[in-house]
Length: 466
Image (tube, rainbow, N blue to C red; front, side, top):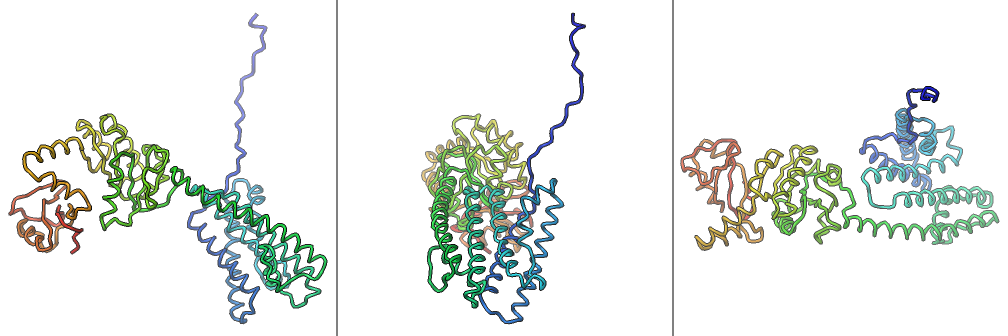
C-alpha cells in the first residue's frame, strides 16, 4: 500500500531574494559638506538673480557654481555605481541630477534652467532626512520634508508661471522679481510692490494665496509637534546622542543624583556632558544639561545610543545595593562597555566583597565597596572623634578640600618624598601618598626616592595647577 503512494520529488529550494531597496551610504562628513554646498550655492543663485552684480563677481559666482555642479554630478555617478539596483536608484534620486544642471553659456539663455537649478534645495531636505534617520532624531522628518518640498515646488511653479504670463505686459519684470512676488504671495504678506495684470497671472495669484494659507498652517502645526515630541522623547530616553569625552552613569539609585552633582561641582568637569542609561520610564533628574537613554546598560545597542564608544569615563551603580546578585549585572554592563570602548575609565559600586575578583576580571578600573567603607567609617567615627566630619569634608565637593591625583613635579624626580611633600605645602596641598606601578603607597617613608612615572594623591581646595 505504501508503494502505491506518490513520492514527492526532492530538490533544492529556490532562494528568495530580498526586494527591499537599500540606499548607498556615504560618510556622515560628506552629507554635512553637501548641506553646506547646497545652502551656499542657493544663496549665490538668489543673489545673482536679485542684484546687478559686477561682471567679475558674477563670473566668479558662476564658475564656482559650475564646480559645485560638477561635484554633485560626480557624487551622483558614484552613488549610482554603488547602488545594487541602478534603475530604482535613478527613479528615487533623479531630482538630484536635475538640480545639478550647470548654467553653461549654451543653456544660460533658457531661464527655465535657473528655476530648475533651484530644485537643488530638495537635495538639502533629502540629505537632512538621511542624517536625521541615521541619528534617530525624534522628529517627524517625513512630514517636515514633504511640507518643505511641497512649499519649494509651489514657490517655483508659481514664480515661473507669474513670470511667463506677466513678462509680455511688464517687460521690466525679472526672474528675481517673480521669485520675490511668489514668496510674498505664498506667505500671504503681499507687499503690493508687484502684482499681476493678466487674467492668467491673477489666477496664479489666487491659487498661490489659497495654498499658502494651508501650507503655513501645516508648517506651524508640524513645527509645534516637532518641538513637543523632541522634548518628550528626550525625557523618555528615546533619543540618540552624538557626544565625545562625556560621563556615563549606568543604572540608577539614590546615589546617582549626588554623584552627578559632585562631578559637576569639580571645576575641571563643570562643562562635561553627562548621560544616564537606566531602565527608567522617564529621566530621573530634572536637569536640562543631563541626557537620558532608556534601556538596559548591559545591551550594546543602548550604549551606542549614548555614544559610549567615545565616552571618557563611566560610573556603574548597583541595581539593588542590598542584593549581591547586582554585581552580576554590573559585570555584564562592564563587559559590554569594554566591547565597544576598551579604553574607558570605569568605576563601579561593589555590593559584595566576594565578587571583587569577578568584577576586576570583567575590566573594572575602580571598585567602591560601600558596605565596607561605611562600616569602617562608623568604627573610626566612634574611636576618634571628628573622623566622620573630616571624611565628609573630603568627599563632599561643596565643602572645599578634596582629594586629587596629580603628576609628581618633574623638579623632584630622583629626590625624596619628604622634600616633595614639604614643597607642596607651600601650594596648600597635603600629600597623602604616591601611585607607583598601580600600587598606592599611602604615607610612604620620608626617604622614598620619587620616579618620573610616579603620581601623587593630594588634598587641596582646588585642582592644583603648576
